[in-house]
Image (cartoon, rainbow, N blue to C red):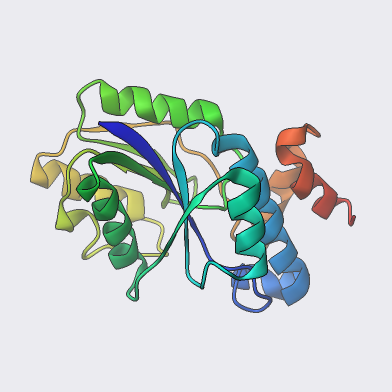
Length: 214
């Protein structure tokens, strides 16, 4: 089975994305950060494996169109429902198409080609799942070779025990999971200081431009 990378990303509209950052940054600048994070992420991972963007708005909107053409992405729209329902739908879609899906969010500056390749290696080793926890207790990526409803239901999305609850559900269901080292994502004003740790390389060019006010 071939692998498929699914990038979950809300359309960058001021006031609807990075809402926890709005008190510190304002709606426009928070939205600009969302655009920068997503663009840099796709620049790092889109060429590693087949990649599709899972958005919450029509594909013909300008920024989605820019990303789709720049990175040669497939596009699929997220269904209605909570985060768990939308993630379950996306991963199930990949499995139905004979793929091994790996779903990642747009908010992790340290998500890289190397991390994606490590996820692929783990999934090819015979485990059923791979998880990349987030430092805040959630997770930034999940890959599955099998479908199981328990991984996405009864989870306290947005809380600080999402990864813990998911791993418990895996153990109860007999799902063998390889867990990678935690990575941080950018969700709150406290997280913004993490951007100082990024190199000035091309891999984070848009975020560095945002940080420098350009």
